[in-house]
Length: 68
Image (cartoon, rainbow, N blue to C red; front, top):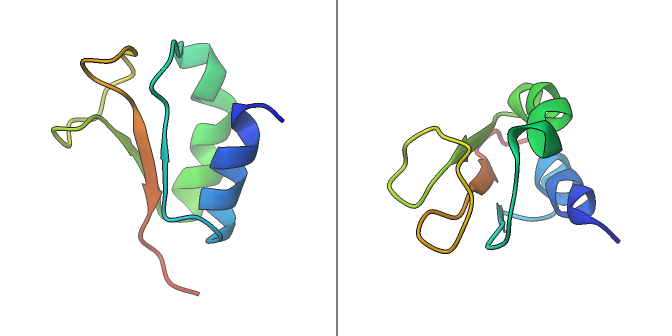
């Protein structure tokens, strides 16, 4: 399965976080942004800043805070 499955689990509340340590481009997650935002999700880096850089120094993190 691809990375999309991890983001799906976060959006559904079945996982608390999705960390992408590899290469990730904005176009990889852009379609998922409205879905995760609607579920209360956020894309950040380890410092909590909203950005879409990828790599080991600043892996993107996705989490949802909304409770159902």
